[in-house]
Image (cartoon, rainbow, N blue to C red):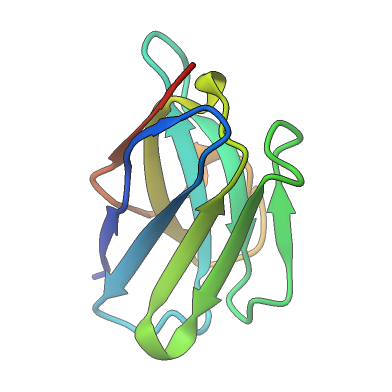
Length: 124
């Protein structure tokens, strides 16, 4: 069993930055794929970015490319999402998620474990 805890959300003005953290416990993250998703009110959950178990591979949604950066610290069993140049449309609950393999990585329905979510609000 894997427990996932995400944190770091908050209120920030447009153009500002936030760093989200995701800590997993129960097993080593070394072989796990870790992704970030977000869900705004009234909208479906959407893919934000993902990182492979080794950290060698990443993928980003077009809407966040060049602004967001995902990284991981295997020793700490943690993944981070650095969000820069935030926009009001980035406002959502952000979720960290874990899956075993690098396939269907942008489909939230294929992830096995989820954090509780952390609210990010960007004011204009």
